[in-house]
Length: 430
Length: 160
Image (cartoon, each protein chain N blue to C red):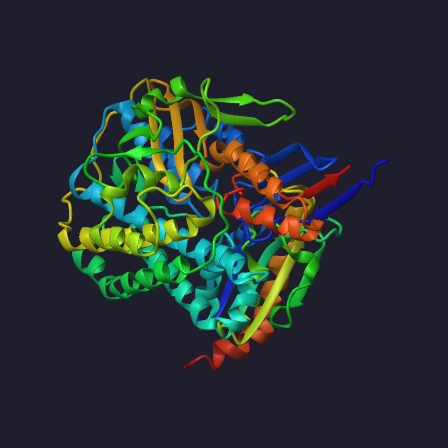
């Protein structure tokens, strides 16, 4: 005799984009947990075949409205890898600055409007604004500081158009960059206040044994370059990505899941970058992280909100450093010659490692493309978190259970707009 | 930002979700030069910044509310949007949330009109379905007419 209950939530609130989750519980035992995202990158990969390699940055930037810079950066680095071009000096610094802008805006949005309401007990950022207007306004202003960087360096705030293989179409003047300094100085204080604010939230106990995968660079907290490393011993060149990672079917699911070959799930994103690169943060960011109670590694995904805040502070400080030392380059891009070849690019999107691979024909057209977004890489880990959270909360009524499960998905700031349309959350209990 | 703004929301690579930006393309040359035409992916904070100082803002967006694809809705935005519009298109932190948030933090224009073009499902692609393309033309004419009426109020007396 079974009593079947079913909950259906039309969409998953406060997750950028949409996805679907299905949970099946029989006799208080978890039978199945599936978190699915549909993957438009497949469309974009096919769409790019035969098109000029110069179009890849702008086409892939359309995959996500929130992290276009990440797609552009992975694309241009892959092309430059294929053609043997190296972008250094001020142009390289400008790319880091552009990436700082994207991290600031993406993280500020997630922290203030999407994630904080979970910890303060509000249904949404809008409901939170009624009681905490000054908090929401601070978040909006912080995000705007990031938007301003993307607008200036990227050419416009939404779908930046100033990025090209080899560099930029136009580079900003020192004076243009310096005009942003007063607001960035405000943002540094606001980011510090944000760490203290979110560090004071109450977090459920949920330490996980993650394999953290991120870029690592000898001299800097990673954005564009480095080796792919993990806390469990991976250390590979970006070009070796497909030798170590694979998208494959897992039991009971139609979706492809990214895995480390013969090892399984892994975790990309702020927690992974932080764990693998803590000592590369600025001294102030390290100090505030420790003051907020974080260790040099954070294994509790619910605390990702604090790590995002630490990364916002880092990005603001790094922006100020880059602007201070900026010398306008004489040319906005480095020349290169397109040739037949294959190139790989991996950069750190706000949500984690974003890998691109292209094969190029001798006339510069794209022969084929491969794009692996961070949320696809986290899919298996998200499912495993959901199992963990389910086990501890099976006693809850369905609506509260759904809420807890949604929160554990939001820990990943999943960009499911690189994904599907509606999110259906279904809990079946037999 | 200008006193009068028309914002087309959507993603040009996501099939019928591109209808907002395409309306913006088709409005080029049809309105007084002082009217700003802005493309948006629907990012709420970008919307707030774009319209906060405007007198009149017209937003054109794809919606999925279960209606017939290609049908056109016109809503006075400051009254709030129908709840059935939530989660339309590929940009969830979108127009509905921006309006609610703008109301909570006093970042709405004096007058806000939203045209919602009903679409079916969203999937990647670079072509509008024929019924959606026809609806885009219809909305272009509606916006032009709207500007000839209410737009004149703001554009003629528009010194601040």
